[in-house]
Image: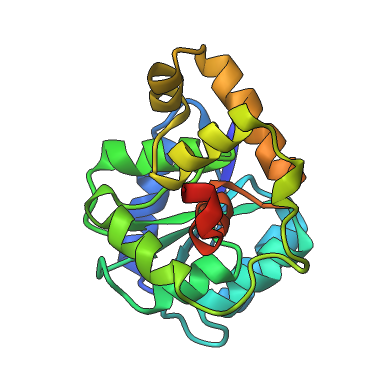
Length: 216
């Protein structure tokens, strides 16, 4: 399956470079590029890409609002590109529905891997600050879902998986920790997403941290 990607960044050279990198991947296609947040929203409406690489600081409509509009109206995933690993705007982007973020100086291989990860429905947070970001964002008062999650509806095994997701573990790591297959771990995560009305793993992590009883 080919992953369709829209690149949104107000710097033409960087945007062209990102498009060039994505174009070298055999499983990816550049569906379009945008220099403003409004252009990104329009491209998503026109092409329905799988992923948008979204810069935060852009003219006309910034990346935060563009992310919110995109995630509220389509299944397209948003991967935030940021210069600073503790950029305060990242919290707003995650709250707006972004599936994670990546530093702009990340290696090419990490960029392509990040796109694949987000396209597959998993969260992507820069490894160096995952724990700090989760801890900080979890204290924010804004709700993640329109209604409180029904934690009573999850099974004991799902709760175990939930705790490990909250620690930032991948499906493979969860499988190893619980001595189950990666496919089974993925199924448990999918059930958690559905039961807790979470868009992706980022929201699962935040829900877990906002409900201390889950973490024991």
